[in-house]
Length: 600
Image (cartoon, rainbow, N blue to C red):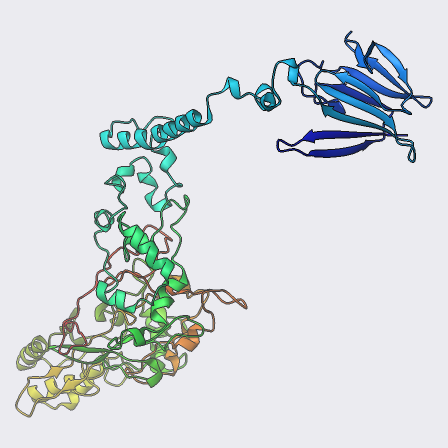
């Protein structure tokens, strides 16, 4: 046998809402408290007013707290009820009607309110009586108060502190702290207590002038008008964002458009690959007059490398032009240098190097090419330092006195040789029959020149002489000693539009011959640069795969290009150049529009 409690609520416009709930319990509690099964919201009802239980087929009702119950007009503290007929119990403003449901045998208790609450309030006052509304300010007053507090704490106080700028930075709570969207990046961490270093004007976005106040050596990527022309068409959302942002100083092509601050106390995140590819994927279409080729991904959509190559060199300058490696271009450096001859482990050069103690087992790349202080590139080749161990310019010896030619100064060489031979000099260093160092062969050439001073001098500049062995010499007509030696111009940086770091390609791990096929080169004009296919053996596009390195655009290129500056920021040591540093670089001025630099 169970209890079925039916709560009846009357609508203001008429009608009833009945909510029946079945309780399979032997005892029901009635009262004002919320933990009662039958809860009556009336101050005239005790928190626990009565109990209703089943006893041997009858309903037993008992009042709690000393207040008798009114049952069918009579008052009882406790009684047994025969609910075969409806029995009514009145508690405060509510009436409970108990009757037995004959088919099921359950006792149904119908609960409804029949009078005003507490005999003094109207039904519509029930919500007010049983709420905390009277203890709090009105909704309107509370809303305006909260709005005022928000404005004061998060607008008026921060703005006042910004304008006066008198706030002590050592305070635990700062006025502008609620406005901070996150910690500064590691590069700008020193500015975390000086917001005005970047945010110069209140309610105005950070301007480019503020950034360039510190970053004084940054170069523009391109002319702003061409940047805008190359940018792909943007959607309605982007246009609307640009229009609204412009009112607050948020403009296109600004520093903050790419470099997002307050993203965490780490290195500033790299710009997404799409930032580059959106424009460069179809650059030839948007800028038909551009000389740049389309590119969007190193693995699948990147042209063959186009290094700057020295085509020819004169004393007026060197002709330098960007050319694709696909066409196997030749270099005109003005130097004779067969790599195969010098790198052979069994040839005469190897034997001589071993005899002179220059290298065991022959020469390798490191004997001539020495990394610079940064390790990124290599020092310029200097004859005396890098070649002098093997290539001597000694032309005469008298006891312990050795006479050498002045490298790089043809007039001085002619003058020294003329004075020496006119003065009766004729001794030659070394044996004329033993195998001698390059340059010492010049003495044999002098001997071939005969007894005349002019013949001996010309022999030095001819093929097989001290100068003609390594340099291209334009011989003057007979009777003249006005020799013209082509200047040597060795390119110090082939990839002017990109950056290659030799430190990341450590020769202790990766042999030079992996990329540079010098051992098979017989001519100095051979361009020993690897093509893009060689790089793709280890590098792929923006996402790593199959054990290959991810190589987004920013791996080799930078938005801000400057002469000689690295394109990639990889802090490996204090002596390593950063993306904003400028390495010593000789500006090219040349004989054509392609650019050149003075010959050395």
